Structure formats: C-alpha cells, structure tokens
View 1: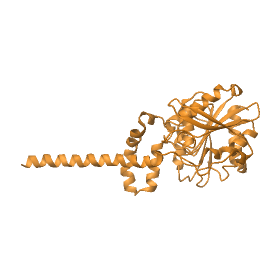
View 2 (view 1 turned 45 degrees about the vertical axis):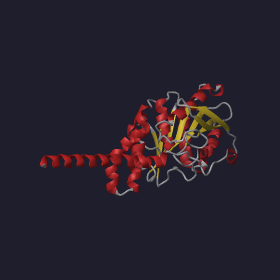
View 3 (view 1 turned 60 degrees about the vertical axis):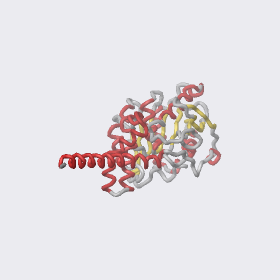
Length: 307
C-alpha cells in the first residue's frame, strides 16, 4: 500500500512539474504573439513631398513568396551609393527616413526605404523579430543589382531598432552588401524580450521565465533562430560598419550595443549618445539639424564607399 501511494505521489509530482514547465514555455510564447503576430499599420506615414523630394514606389518579392513594398529616392546621376533603410518593430514608419533620403540625395547617394514584412503595404501577418526580415533586404538587393543605373554601385544597409538587427543579419547573409549602419539594434530578440520582461514583471517571475524564452522563440520561428545579430556581426569580414546607440536607451538597453561591439570586427566605427533616445537624435526626420549625428553618418558613408 505504501509503495502504491509513493508511486502515485511521484506520478502526481512529475505531472505538476510538467504542467509548470509547459506554462513557463507558453507564457512567453503567448506574450510574444501579442507583440509579433500582427500587421503593423502606422498612424503617421510621411510623404516625400513633405521633404521636397520625389520617391518611386517599388514592389519586390522575397524567396519565401512575400511582396515587399519600398520607396526609391534617386540621387542625381551618377549615384555614388545606394542606402537601404529599415525602421523599427512598431514605429516609426520607414517613411520617417525621407529626411535621411533627402540628405543622402544632396550628397550623391540614392536611398530605398523598405517596409519590412508585416509592416505598411508589405505582405505578411507576422513580425519575424529579425529572423526572416533579412530576406526582404535580399529581394531589394536583387532589384538594385538588376538596375543598369546602379551598376557596380556600393550598397549600404541602414536600420533602426528591429531594422538595425535586420541590417546586421542582412549584411552577414548577403555578400553584395558593402557596409552597415546600425541604430539602436538589439543583440538578439531573446535578450530584448528578457529585458522587456525584467521591466514589466516582478523580478522573481522574470528570472523564473528567462530560461524558457529560447524555447518559446524556437517554437515560433524554428531553425530561423540561428540567425542572430550577435552572431551575424562577426561575419562582416573587411566590410565597414557603424554602430550607434544611446547610453540610457530604455527600449533596447545599452548592453546590447556592448555585446554587438564585442563581437564586431576590429575597427568598427561607433557613436554613443547620452540620454534615453531610441531614435538617437531629436531631429530624426531632419537629420541635418543634428550636426554630430549627420556628420558621423556622412563621414562614415564617404569612407565606406570611397566617394
């Protein structure tokens, strides 16, 4: 009888442990779904006319079958480089880069502003946390390579937040991209999610759930989770990179920047700004109004492309 009770107790205990493990996996999985399983429609979309420029809408198709919307702003011929711009997970719209595009155009650089999958007019119903968005960049790179006016023109990828993480993954996986500019990028989605939990949940619960974030992410994205900025940044080879972050960023904390820089090739350029500014500058839509930021960008681009 005692043996039977012992077996029942052990079985019951094992069942309780299994239920807790399932709950600890499902909770981050569910919360991720609230953040990522959505189609982003921006409340504020800028127009090129607001910046005194013209833009040509583009539509390209990814290898996994999604139509990606983009906007091309051409410099006066000849173009010295093409800069591909990517924005954040929920805000702002990539059209906030029109001010950058205007500045780049004035210095002889063309721009293509890319709405990543599940953003704006691009297809897709799920944000992929940087694991698949590099395919969107690949499709635009293919477009650039096909244009006679861009023959042998260097390609630079520039992204903010999720766009920064995507830019890092994109250059690591595409030899045709010549340089990288990353603004406020996370080192990995898992670490960014853990940081968010630490700020949103009781300390003890965040610590308890932390080991299960990786499992929840793999359940959502499968093998794609092997593509992380913290790994990708080490694969640039001799290609130049500029990493920019604000020291007190509350959305993607500064340790992400330090982890990326630690794994980046020697000689990677950096700019650190004080305060909590995920957009890096208070003049994001008119970057020329921030002389340090705009000078850093233009100096890096000139050095990177040699023009």
